[in-house]
Image (cartoon, rainbow, N blue to C red; front, side, top):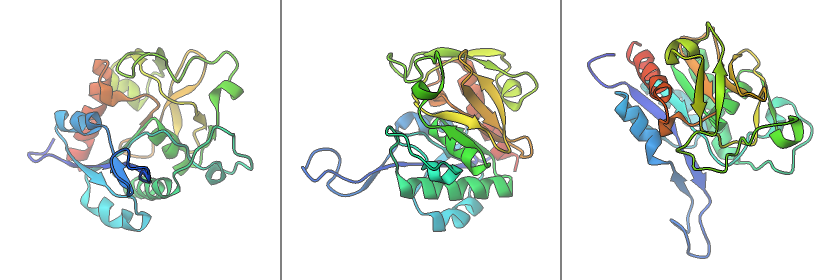
Length: 243
């Protein structure tokens, strides 16, 4: 890592505001859990929040050393990966998705280190030409509870990491326990490859081998429930600092 902390852009969630006066504001606002920023800072990075504006992506990426695309309680529009139907469970945040796609595509094209988390992994797959399972319970027979009932700072299930992958090198593990908070998953990774799977066969991590550091994980490593989670952020910061 360089002597200065690499600057890591972090995408935000957004809410429209509450007209009944409840919640944070009556007007649109951004949101992010503290542990995303804390995980980056603890690993040696300097986190900075990124607004939703696809037109701002080139200028933002030019100043960043790395990028984290975060998760959220919404879905990528199925039309963006060629689906002609939308499952009833799908909810959209169009502006956020447009901004994150612009950031992801720019980072992929420029070789900027990139980590996609949960929904960020799914968006990364779409940016690389892949497709998604719109609702796991309806598409995967015998599926695990990928929306785990226990708290998100606890493990929900194990994942098996494929040998020879970036994720295997980063974590130094073949199997790890992860938390789980998603109803969608990667179906086809496009130009990426799958690097971890759950016991029910659901894709849990993807990576793009033709890129210096492009990794997506379906779980939330910012909760740091294992050393492998910490290693993921450390590897991102190391890759960002070496640019």
